[in-house]
Image (cartoon, rainbow, N blue to C red; front, side):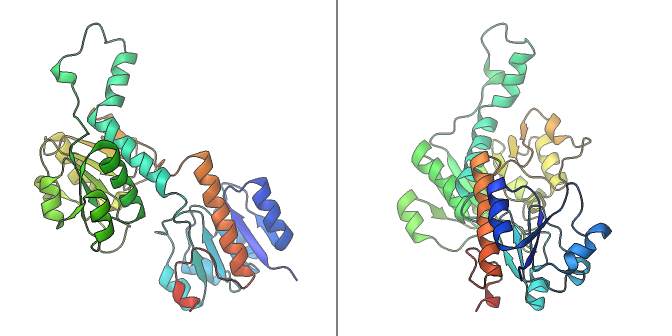
Length: 324
């Protein structure tokens, strides 16, 4: 008898065909919530759940007593209680690696756009204000040869650092990570305590995962330690930053500019001053949002759940202790 699988989110026809060949698949219509009352009967018999933006609660897990595995089409799993899944013997799979380079592209896009004021000046041109050569009041900042401070030095942080060091001749500093001697040799990177990094870097780029230890890691105290000419980049999670402190720092010249792909509340509230500030580049959480990468992430999730439900080790297993 085929195992039952619940799909929430976008999969290609070929990916759905693969799953339909192996399992009994129930595709939830959008924008139906996973734990909506009308889905309880489907969840009750499900051994697997695959999707993006999954919000998993103990109540939902109670409604799915046969659940064996959840495959999220993302690297992060902020809304999924890993310890509770582990306690219940439910595997959690995610999709690292496949989005590393694309997210690093986004990070460096923000570095370039903020430093050279690209969005601000493009809008200025569109508005018909370019009537003569620009003066110093519209000049940007160089990127090449500057100091790039990486707060977090995992896969994505390293990929951003490679772009800076090898492509732009930047000095790389890193903090909130274990020593990386190989990368220090490759990139000339130097490890610093966070306070030292903030004081020395021209660009501070945050790539740490969101945990209890990193929530609001960057606040008023940290912004005050940055250079007034410093540019702050966040491609991690919005809650890693105290957003009110960031707004204050930008409004009062504590830091020069910010490039943001993530926010405390997403979608960003229309009342937020951030996208209206000329010294802010605000993107709608597009870190991995390319056709190629989103398809690769979905394929990784499909492979994860297929292997798990067939009794084989998934490629990307978060709570590895269950397999051991």
